[in-house]
Image 1 (cartoon, rainbow, N blue to C red):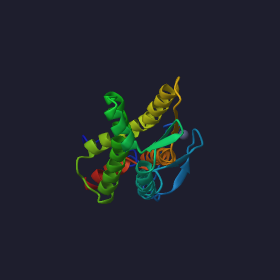
Image 2 (cartoon, rainbow, N blue to C red):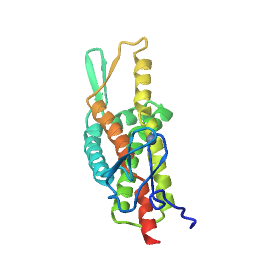
Image 3 (tube, rainbow, N blue to C red):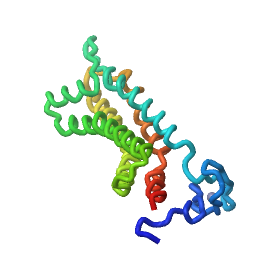
Length: 212
Ligand SMILES: [Zn+2]
């Protein structure tokens, strides 16, 4: 066995995603066929079905949603009859002007850098797998793990925003509401999480296996 390890598929097995048992998989079976897990009854596949196509569709939709998420107002602050609307970036600039540096940096990282960074990483992974690139598979796997793990922190800025709204509304005549961008922003987050879930990182290693 080489130091690259032996994949379950090369050893004649497919892994059940639910109970993790190994299901015998004959080499002559088409790669997109399905079997029933003999232990728990779930559907077992060699690789996530149509992984590249699905991930591309989700990533591209997330890019499209990212535009209105940044162009429309994220917050609408009403005070004494006048309403001021701010985009995410506008809100960050306003927080900077008010001297709330840590909150401004947190919102900038969580709302602008992280979602775009995740989408760019997934795009890079998709292109590398599609071009069957043998380039640094280990680093690409780490990159995928980071993108997948970061998903659970994606709503952090929504949390910060709600906290901020509660703070501002506490004992003042101001009312703060989440603007139209909120829906688009939430869809970027959800689409990116789904895209990370539908990408099959084993595709990175399949190329290495074929090269042997
Ligand atoms: Zn199972």
